[in-house]
Image 1 (tube, rainbow, N blue to C red):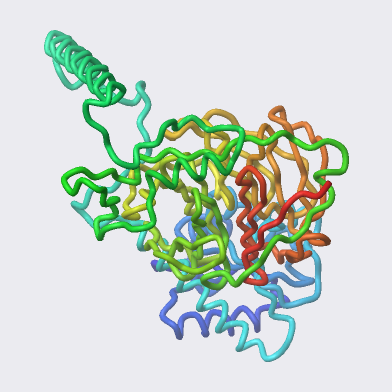
Image 2: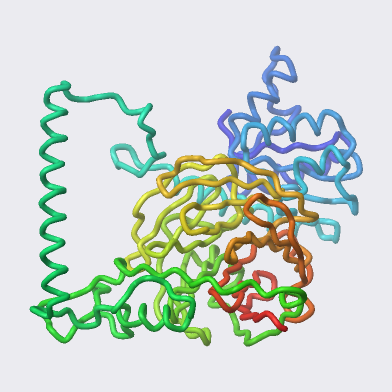
Length: 473
C-alpha cells in the first residue's frame, strides 16, 4: 500500500499509535503502521525496511518505552540513513538516550505531554500536511524542465565531433576578444568624458569605511524603481539593472580584548512575519526570510516593508531556511537544495543539491558555507561543487552562522556565539542574550545572523523580532 507516513512506536504505546494513525488517515494522510500493514508471509525486518524507504515522513512516538527500545532505534537509524524527514512526537517527559539523541537531537520535536492529546495530533497533522505539500512542490511536472544539480566536467560527455568542437572554441575565442576590445574602447570613452552614464559610481571597490560602500551602492541602487525593477535615470533611454550591483560589506578591524564581549542593542522591531530564519543587509535595505509566509521581505533599516518576493520553494515545515548574499545575488537553502535568487525579480538563477539538510547559510567572499543542527559544515563554490565537509565542536543546537572578517561565527540555541578562525580553531565566544536581548533559548529553531561591517543583525524566530546589535568597548 502506498503511504505518506511511517509511524514508529513501542508496543507499550500502541493505543497512542493507533489514535495517531486514525487521526492522520482521517485527514487523508496515508500511514504505515505495524503490525497492521505487514504483508502476510513477509519477514518483519524486511517489511519495516521497505516501508521506511517508501515513506515521505517518519514519525517517532518518543516515550519511556521507545527511548530504550532497540527495535525503535533501528527504525530511527534506517530513516536517518535514507534521509527521510523525521518528526519526534514526545508523549512522556523523557530526554533522548545517548543512542537516540545521536539521531534526533537536532530535529524539531512536537511535545504532546499535556492532555488532551487530540490537540497535539491536530498540530502533527498540520505539520505533516505542510511538509508533504513542500515535497510535492519540489517535484517537477512531467515535461517541465527544472534546474538540476550542477554537472562536473567528468559528468558531461562530448556531444559533437572533435573538429566541430575546435571550430566552436575558436569562434568563441574570437567573440571574447572582440568583447574585450569593445570594452576597452568603451572604458576609454567613459574616462575621456565623451559620454557619461548618470549614477555611475566612481569606484566599486569596497573601502575600509562601510558608510562609503553603502553610499556608492546607493548611487546605483536608487530609491525609485520602475515596475521592471530598473533604476530610471536622467536619460530615459539608458537604464541600469540593480542585479548588476555588487555590494560586499567592508571588513572592519577586529577589536581586541573584551570588545567582542560587550554587546548593546541599537534597535529592535517586529519581524514582517512569524518565524524569520534568515537576514542579510544590502546597502540601506534588509532582506528577511519568513518561511511560513513563503516570502522574502525587503525592509528599510527601521523595519518598514518596502517590497517582497515569493520564495522559489515552499519553506514551512520541520526544517528552516537560511539566507546569504554574495554581492550580486541572494542564496537560500531548502532542505538539501541551495538556490541562487535574483533579488529584484525573485527568479531562480541556479540551484544545486547539497549533501546535508542545512539550517543556515553564509558567504565568505568566494564560497557558500552551510551548517546543520548537529554542527556539521559543508562548503560549496557558487557552481555547486563540494569543497569540503567539517564538524564543528559546539554545545547545543546550531541556529545560525555568519562570516565576520576572517572569522566564522556560530549562534547556538542558548544565545551564545562561538568564534572560529578559517582553520575552525575556536578563538572566542560571547552571549548575545545579555546585552542585545535576543532569546536565551531558541527551542531548536533557526535564526538569521548577518554581520554588515559594523553591526550584527539577528532575526529572532522565537520572539519574531529583528535586532541590531553593536560591539562595545
